[in-house]
Length: 455
Ligand code: SF4
Image 1 (cartoon, helix red, strand yellow):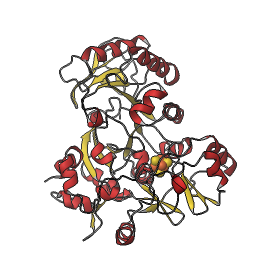
Image 2 (cartoon, rainbow, N blue to C red):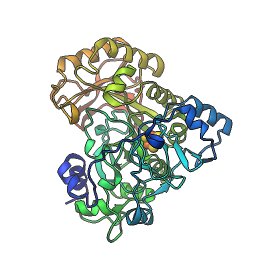
Image 3 (cartoon, helix red, strand yellow):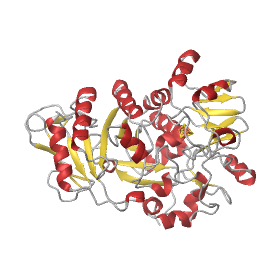
Image 4 (cartoon, rainbow, N blue to C red):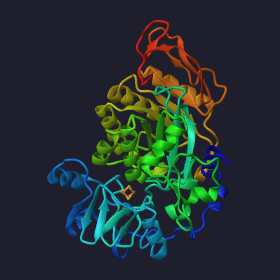
């Protein structure tokens, strides 16, 4: 089995995923709250006393950091007493798969992660909401360092990014875990799993790096390590122009993503982050200054929808989008139109108006068709007319580049039109570019500049 096939199976086939889990336990039942089963209020958390601040990257003053912390969300539910122990924990560390986390507070022997608005507050032995972080005796560790559970070479159009190096290939990887609990998750086989359910550190160590093997078995993928510098070398060896942290949620494997982006920059390889955008401002700024392109999933445009559909909140995503704009990172937005959840056309109009006003008319927006999935298998796919109406609304609000995804055969659904002369300048068929009429980022017909990263 080639690298591509193996990794595709790992993402798409739950049986394959389960088949390579050697040490998975029963499904997680313990969703406890902090300290003796009682939810800990933000005030109570602060009352524990900050014994130290660990792993804070950047030069923000302690005062600023505490001010932001004070204003942030209450901690999310976590998995009480669920951190790996004994031989498994020892092997995990020996492999280099456990690394001290960044952006967290030490609160005596408790710790609080500040990477995403879940703000997990963990006592020793607890596991985080995203399943990927644990408190080991007062130190916060990520369990998903250098241990992707899947990787694949994708066309960049699959992210989807339509205005970033069109037609190029990107080496894409993911670990388990996610900061959200989307009812419609397409990658729940990895996003809603613990690292120990997708990786196995027992047996002979296997490091993936050039020269690349002809193929890998699923068992080998479960055991292999892929350190950031090796990931960059593999991407180069596979002829990719970029490396993408994607599929599950890069915020949930923040430290790995950060080091990959750093290593890619050092080798002048581009990097991509595909994210739900739910991340705190400080880690977002630290990470995205290293990122060449981002794809953010704006899942709806009100808090109630985010709460019900995704177990998240809207405002942190809007903040991230504005941070990306401020940092000058190229980014595109996707909106999955889920029947009865996010298909309200007045909400879509408000969302498009906000994007045009706050992020600019040149910001590409991809409407995507929902297909029955995960916990929403009972819903029908999004009617195509709804998507076409959404596109009309987006255009009427001033957005210049609006696409419809997941509807094969729909005419011009994925075509880029020149906003000046209206001629088709990039045509696509699923993930392939079938015509390209740009010269140095300008329309070949009228010379208008087209927003994006073209070389
Ligand atoms: S990144 Fe994970 S551990 Fe950190 S706050 Fe978010 S859910 Fe919790």
